Length: 218
Image 1 (cartoon, helix red, strand yellow):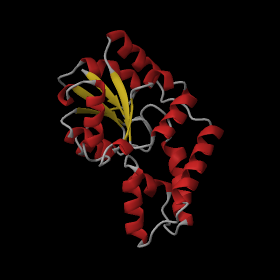
Image 2 (cartoon, helix red, strand yellow):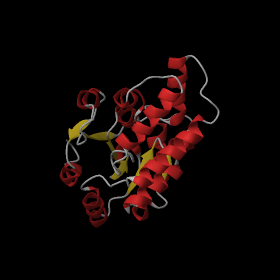
Image 3 (tube, helix red, strand yellow):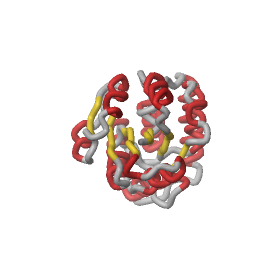
Image 4 (cartoon, helix red, strand yellow):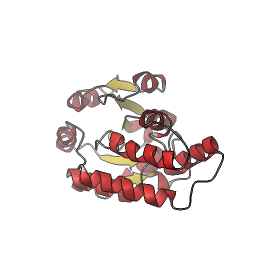
C-alpha cells in the first residue's frame, strides 16, 4: 500500500486564502464570481484547466500578467496569514512512517507553491523528493494522469494506492486511476454530496485516517 495526498486542503489549510485571492483577480478580469463560486468551479483543477474555464466564461483571453500577478498575491497572502497545516496531519504522517507505508503528494499546484506552503507549515521535510505536480503531466485532474505519474514515481502499482483528496476533480482523478479514494470533508466548504457522487469515501477528521487506511477493504 501507498498513500497519495493532495496538497491544498488536505496537507495545508490554504483553500479559502487562495480562493479569496483568485476571486478578487477574477473580478478585476471581468468575471464577477464570489469566493464560493470560484471554489465550486475551480478548486482541484490545474491552472491550465482553470484558465480554459475562465476564458470560456468571459469570452476573452486573460491579461498576459494575470497568472504572475495572481501567484504573487496568493504567495503574499500565505506568508502574511500564515498558512497552517491541516489539523491532525502530522499524526497521520507519523503513523505512516511507523508502519513503513510510502506516501507522496500530488497536487494541481506548481512545485514552487507546494514548496512554499509545505515549508511554511513544517511539512516540507516529510515530502522532499516525493512531490508531483500537474505541470508534470499532459492532463491534470479530473484525469488520472497525475496520480498514475505519482504512483510510478514512488514505484507502487496504482491499485495499491490510496488517494486522500478534498476536491471533486481530485476524487474523480483517483477513481479514474483505479485507486481507492478517501475524501476529506472536514472543512466547512467541503462539497460532501459531490465528493460522494464522484466515488470518494467521506471522513471528517485526520485523526480517523490511520484507522481508515488500516481497513483497506472498506
